[in-house]
Image: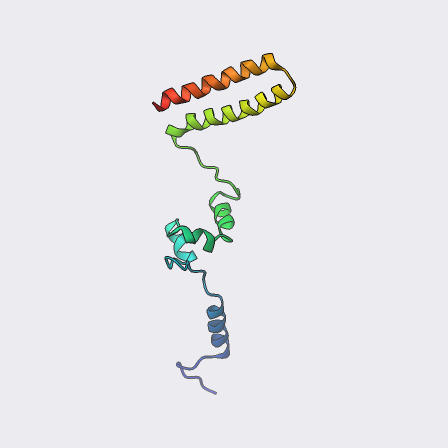
Length: 126
């Protein structure tokens, strides 16, 4: 039996039908497809985040070489600010622990260090 070029083989028909069933997710607001978002490297609107939410962890993991958290560098302008904020948070936890232990003399020292860090941050911003 000879096939015409216009005729579909059973294999071609099945591939076509499977392709139709496996439609790519599309954002209902902006019309962006997942493939387009991956290609341009960003989403088109706020609805894209919920539309593609199940794919985001896989995308981040692939971009971050297996890590689930962003491991890039902070901008140089913000690096000192971020370090100061982390230090203040750490000292805040320590202060709370010292107060609970009723180690008030040490707590005063930690409180003063937090105050100095906050003042330094305000003077840098101003």
